Length: 200
Length: 200
Ligand SMILES: [Zn+2]
Ligand SMILES: [Zn+2]
Image (cartoon, rainbow over all chains, first blue to last red; front, side, top):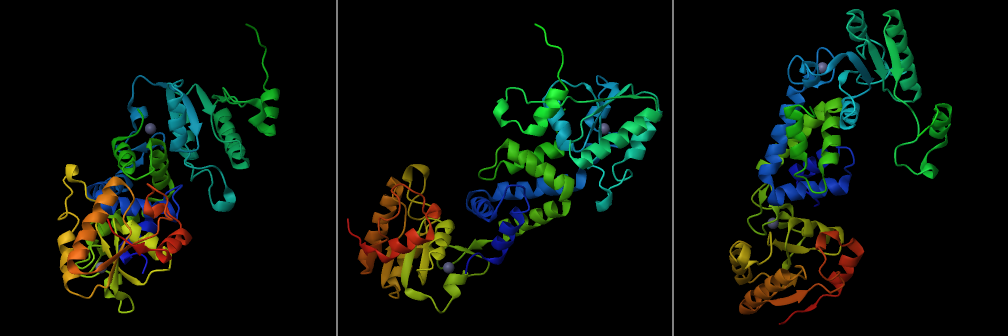
């Protein structure tokens, strides 16, 4: 014997979580069984509620529990500025920078025709409609720098040009506070190409 | 804004799991929302099934989904040998040593009067009854080496002496003050082979 069937099934289910291998899955299952059955039931309820209740914002495709997400509902945010990101986690990262007060558009992926991910799957028709509304002054590209990220960025650039909206891209370079020796060559090359006049 | 309420609740619920801080909880929630909603619902179902369906074996107090656990049901196991452990995770650790073919008794804790954990909470009345049945030839103590573990070991020793059952203790090859569930199988196998008569 190793585990009883329900425990085995629970351990196996935990391994669907990122960063959870068989060993931590086992620890999680036993911890809940031994001293956290109410926590376990609470987690189950939270999972069901979120899996069923979290939808996408009609306007920006980020997570929302109503028609519009909190950002799209917030009148203090600048609707003339829209930042294009690949995922809701990227929205969080930008929000945590506490630098940005515009809106977002969340692609939920990047162009990858071989995997069946085309412009429609990324909601780029929705973005096109928003660009033609005339309210957007500037699109900020914050997609990744992989091949798919670049392809996506260029597709969005074309859409924005047709609508006469200006496009910028977040700066690429060495991370703040980072040690130069740990920065990869491609990033350093990009940082060198993007060098700017410096004065105190 | 940071997260919508359902996402916030899910992230917070994940932090009840051992080794999961706010940052990994966030990664887990977003991973399930983005590309694993069925996994999320499956995990919820497995949690509910296990929290409700996993009970304790009537005979040894280990996890069971029927009256008796798989070990107590297994006719190939030696009922004359009973290993006393603090938790179901410790049973797993001993099983993984592949050295032991006897039965278990799972205390689900250790004596800690200040926390309200007395002999009854550890099912020591059930153990006493089993000792008096006359089938047990040897009790093997595999409780921890903390103060509570020692107190528990001595309490069990007294019970066994009254019933005329001999008591051994797994060899102190296990790290002092260590948690049994983190000991590797080879060390545990060695500790079992090296068990010695136990007396106060
Ligand atoms: Zn929105
Ligand atoms: Zn049992």
